[in-house]
Length: 318
Image (cartoon, rainbow, N blue to C red):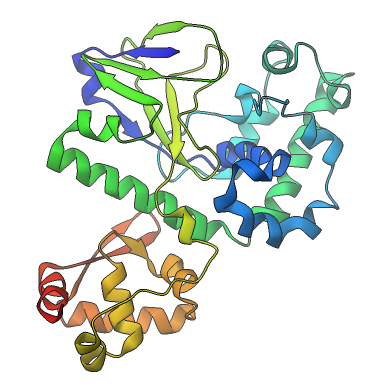
């Protein structure tokens, strides 16, 4: 059990972030044991051939049988707009002491691929991660980021509607919040309590956890949790919708309207409904111009959400 103790200032300073490097490191879980991550089987199938050409010895040395990864793969993101290049540049400057400490915390020793001169080991680490990104993440990252950003928007709206406690208690079945304490039931048998004391708690949505996750060692306060909506990322979606609305709007626009009870980007919707990016943008603009959708910019994405008028139209047709 890991407990983060929040004072009043800490409660007000809870924030969200997205870390490409964190997502990259956690993806090793899905590669190591695909059966635990059925929602990402689509990604694993699409990237299987590309992964066969990577430095697998270095990558497999970054994860153990418990699916733990070193804390240097889980940097605390400063915002939802963190860039992988910046994170890899910071990783390249890791000290020998930090590098060894984080590897030993997971494996009990330094794995063979990372023994030897420190600079050479870190160069191999960064190169292996960069190649993994280019081969398996870069083609799909806009879609994946859209899901992560939509999750953050949802959680923010939940805080506004129901409060921080409701949001925190809904993150995962293994996460509880009460009386200023966030409790995370980890697979790690140790019992740790950490007062945040003004250092801030960062919440990080990810595709590659099924429960609450946290740094292995004494890293900055961070909680990684499963993002909502990822199940639809790799499969096209068919939404049952009232025939009357489809007769007015057309089947594709009616399906989009029915699906947008939660915010989503045009990129995510294009994948879910097997519609080209240009076509889905055209449909979303038409629905927005008619007052059936609202939209807001979040980082580099525009997220759409069904308006009260759109919801009333669906309800009336039903």
